[in-house]
Image (cartoon, rainbow, N blue to C red):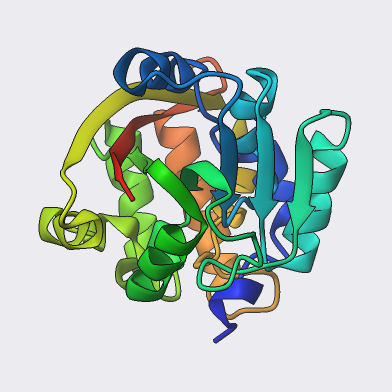
Length: 251
């Protein structure tokens, strides 16, 4: 099994094209709740290809994107390189290499479930300025429509370690423990994606637990994907819905 920091090396192209992004409404909410503005310095930990960092760069923030995976980090540099406030960092959640007390908002989007939580908490305390916040974000794919239920069944049948690495394994107590002794506030926003067949295939293969070409589960998985797409598509598309979950607390 690939180390967590290497799991997405062969997924970059599909990740960029087919993963859901993040709404600018997140920044608007931060402005309303904690007085966030363009002067805050942001660290996006486990930043991947830069999907989450972009909303802060568009707001005018200085953003350090910390990503240990070379291929993902280089994709982020290509995606975000034109933003004046962008700085790419080769680091991990446990050792960001950022300066002590240099960050106002620490963000982890779709990455927290890969971290050593205790080590990350210590690193947040080290790099966070007095009064700093930590924001955890993930898009939780809903399992409600007939297609979404069939897609979930596909993952359970064919994915390698889907149930063990799913961020839905993170419970309320885990979040309370991470933010303690500070309080954590939770919110969610509904988002959607709609794909033709090639898009939903790319969305599947962007996941680290989806077998890739050469794995014995790959061909039967793709055949099943074609079957459920054909069964549930409307006008040549199927839809995913997500709860974009936000957890915010002091460092």
